[in-house]
Image (cartoon, rainbow, N blue to C red; front, side):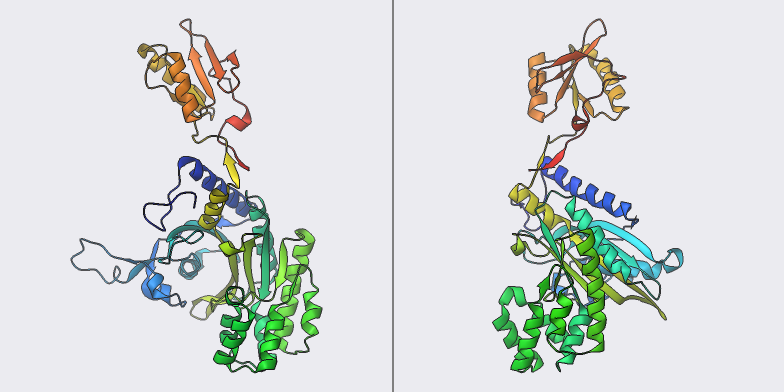
Length: 442
């Protein structure tokens, strides 16, 4: 992060840093809404049983209790802060299924809490931005393609370096492993998921130890994981390995659709990477991971996948596909590397000066007139010399200073250029770039 927080893992931004974070959030919200996603917000707490049902390590969950409670009620015992937005969303869908129109398109931007070791890119309190489409009983596969394109568009509008959305398919991987005689596909996926961290040799040792794979099976599993293409040529490369399996065929076709359409709409942004496994057990098809090119050590900035049975209600299942963007992880890297600049640290565009203390009420009227037209304004606290009032504005980063003469006429000064012109509080407007702080790529 740009600065070290006083409480490790709980970042706090300076005003100019917060403006960059707000810009990121605004871009994401605008893009998601353009793609037809509705905003929701879920409660911050869930029951511990519900959170741990999906296999999360319990030591990473922050439990919640009331300090002054003499005796916790049944509904208040066993509560914890949510560590992601997917598990709360699954509950939300089940509880509100009768009120939602399916397929339900949702985006959700909220804080999460996870008790892991803090470092750049990993905070204990962090903001996530999720998009999901959930169906009732069935969900057409084309949503897997659509979500990839929506996320590529959203990330492409942010002040970040080039990125790569890496895509794989769990059906492809599991079908391949079964085709070579490895039936414990979950164990194979867990081992392959560590490939970037520990390397091929150690992954091979894990496969032998945990799945009983022989040398031929290890070689084939690693060869599959080594396939990476920016087009659909991965299909022929997988076929060339000589493995046959019905599930493999299904996964190949689904991945071909995602990568083929992405190559057409966003060339170079999406690649088929058959080493991507995603450790969470609830993914059943397409899986996504996104990295900043040249900043792979930061980890994934956006990940997710297809889940066919994360949410259930009696005999009803709610299959879905979703991606989660690590907003705090992205913002921390934007700040630490200076990827973005902000034109000023305060929203104020105009400081209304005071010729004397009796002019305060009239100055407030000027500020009110400006605000009514969307121009951020504040009034000087005291009638100091104009030079001091101008210096105050300059120190704050306020670009314009307003003067009212004794005869009731007005002038406004751009303190950056020194230009001063006559102005009317009811009609004067600053240039569009000065209406609010502007965030731009550095």
